[in-house]
Amino acid sequence: MNEQLFDEKKLKRDLKIDARGVGIPVGAAEDFVERVVKDAQKSFGHRQIITEADLKRAVVKELKKYNADFAYVYQNRDKII
Image 1 (cartoon, helix red, strand yellow):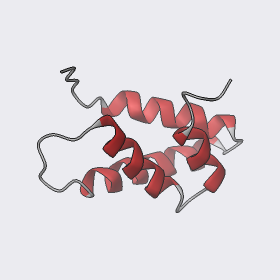
Image 2: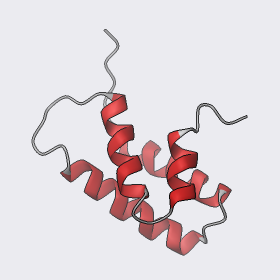
Image 3: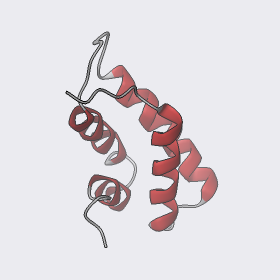
Image 4: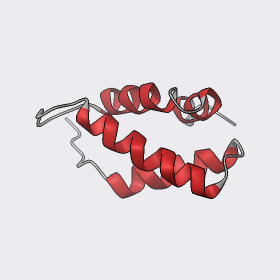
């Protein structure tokens, strides 16, 4: 089993890159990212272990509240060529 620790900085960096890719201004992207990460973390409550898929699903759900294109790009970031 491959276990990884949650890397909040990496998640935020990846989200900011994707936001820039869909043309979201830097200031707005930083605001979205902070809110999304905070709200996604809240959705897990006190669970000690979550899967990468759970994290991605929670982040996408939160991103959709702000920008559907941003959510789509993040959700499919490993598939986009």
